[in-house]
Length: 115
Image 1 (cartoon, rainbow, N blue to C red):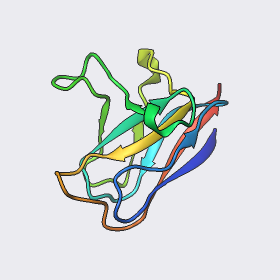
Image 2: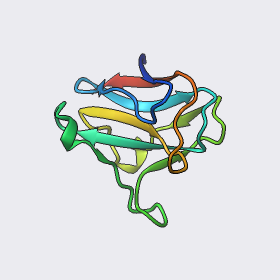
Image 3: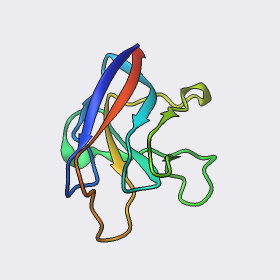
Image 4: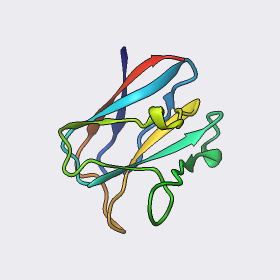
């Protein structure tokens, strides 16, 4: 397995683009963060306007794929065993209350396997 790093900078809630064209996400190591949930945004290329949140039909409520992480310091498994494969380009988003932003840089580690 190969790690890929994604950083959510201080004052933001979304990471930079993560290139998964040759990788499949298996898990996300989450440091201490200011949010209790991660959302994932996917795209088929790097065009910023085309990134959309991933959906998961079994998730009650909004249908968005949300990974509960509490305060962090854990590894969240990406649910690929349910047929949800990572898109070619991914962004990780911390779901924060309206008007809130991440208070420090946070580096998340994606554990990946070859596509």
